[in-house]
Image (cartoon, rainbow, N blue to C red):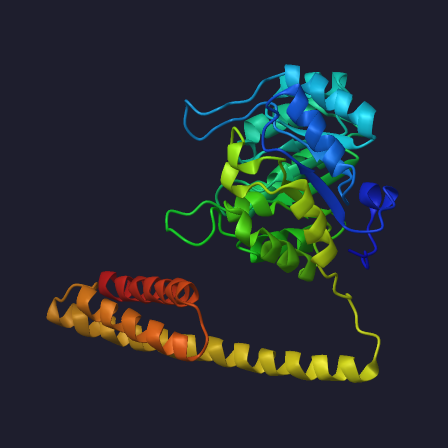
Length: 360
């Protein structure tokens, strides 16, 4: 990979020839495992070795990390390879131990970001630090929680701050373990344009076969780096085996990934791009107008149902619409997942309009 982006603050100071690559196992399992992976990553584009020491699991009974002992293994790997080291911290005690073992990058996990109380505890423990602190998005798609966590670290004078996008949990089954919801990290970066944005494709994917595509999408969206779970024997990893790749796979992936130019130089390119963007703007405007007209009809239906004492939700009609739209979507090269999400949102808005009419 070649880096075409001008980065600020700590990431720019690292003077990398490519986007930042953080790699390593989901969990530190043994000293031998950590050192073996570190030496293999030394031959790749990876700059930072990551490993989970304390592993907060969704349900008890799963491997929950080796604890502070693993920090000594990371420290040894750093001494032997020269790689920076990174681990997750979930409370002030974790922070204290990580700092004592000279951990370079501390990240705040998705389950931690959801709690302003815990985030504040960690921010207080890191007050004024020059260590790099990365904040993962909360488990659920809540931009305000993510922004709030970032603001707490800024308020604690954490000098070197960044964020990690690891996707969002959803009740509905999709092809991802955690839905990317790309607009949310884009919105966050609009609020903090100088804040480095790192992709964690492993937790979004939940499986290794779509990690490359996620990384390419992130780079196309001008993300600043990648954090990829990497293990020399992924299938036998003690946690999250399905989403880890080998250092050799990581090495080939970083060769194959393409970095897009932020701006085209040619006048012809810019003219064509502006023309295409204008066409999109026109269509977007038409979409909004069409949706507005649709909701006015929904209001009329609400008034008719109210007059005739008919229930708002008509399941048979809804299923017919959904089936028809999925077929039409396929004809227009739109995925079933996309059609479902769009029309469920439209249907919910229509229900809201009808409720308002009936309850007035």
